[in-house]
Image (cartoon, rainbow, N blue to C red; front, top):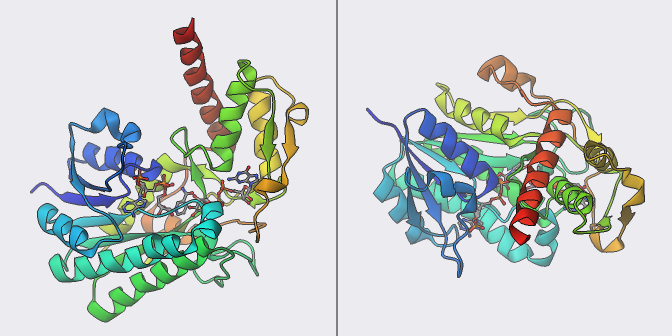
Length: 326
Ligand code: NAP
Ligand code: F7E
């Protein structure tokens, strides 16, 4: 029998990679999309004829219930969120509504409409925040440092509570930062690789960043969606840290990215106070040994390969733009 999956956040970075993965495994893939004045379908344009999109919004319970009824999913992946940490200070209530309560709305929907469906919650290493031990694993303390971080803690505990209260197959992936050429342009890795390409081709002269010393455990999104799927194939639901086990600073990322284009980053990068956050998460480093042991998951793309992949894709994009402009 064909398996079906409903993905919230299908138009996002992870939603697009997960859709490709599930289609490749023969799933019927449904995606929840919200109404926007201009549809944001660029990341799934190449598979639009293979997925079924259902209109709905994580702030609207009845649209979620309708999407679940229509898709009758075997698996539900809750990837939708207001996912940009910096914006969460400007829009804390919206972030709480979508990223926090949104998870409860979809858990409620699954519990009533399709209680046997396997459920995935997109938890985040931002929940560890101000860390008291390194590396961080599934038992490390949560100390979120932003409205995004505390909304994710709420959603994470909601997932555990629905599992324990109703016996739902609900799992959380505590994913550390994962990037790709499809990463939103506001996140630091993509902001850097996009600027490298623009500077290299003469479209820009400089790049302004915030805290260059913040350290992140960066992996490749294509590797991380495999872990999501693996979690829902297990007999028992559980929570898993997904990470590479390596950490690098923003400065190191910038140095390597500029180097890839033959440029010296120090000539182009400056610090702008505008990008310094009210509270910072200084260091994240994940221990994914549980995922390795139980799921058999490990990252395949290295940090260096990731930086190169992102720089090359952005260079290609701007080279094509330049050709068209001639
Ligand atoms: P992303 O690219 O920002 O995508 C977010 C998705 O959520 C988009 O499809 C967006 O739709 C949708 N969305 C936002 N508000 C919505 C609403 N009110 N109703 C329905 N959909 C809504 O995020 P991502 O990087 O793919 O991350 C996927 C999930 O993993 C998120 O929950 C994120 O918080 C979490 N996470 C990400 C990372 C990471 O490093 N990438 C790490 C840990 C956890 P539009 O296209 O309409 O905006
Ligand atoms: O920042 C520093 C910034 O915005 C990374 C989301 O996917 O991963 C992501 O959250 C670091 C921070 O990602 C700039 O201060 C310096 O320390 O790329 P980011 P994030 O905040 O780590 C987690 C796991 C998620 O769950 C989130 O959804 O880089 N930084 N200068 C900067 N960051 C940005 N965005 N822009 C700068 O100019």
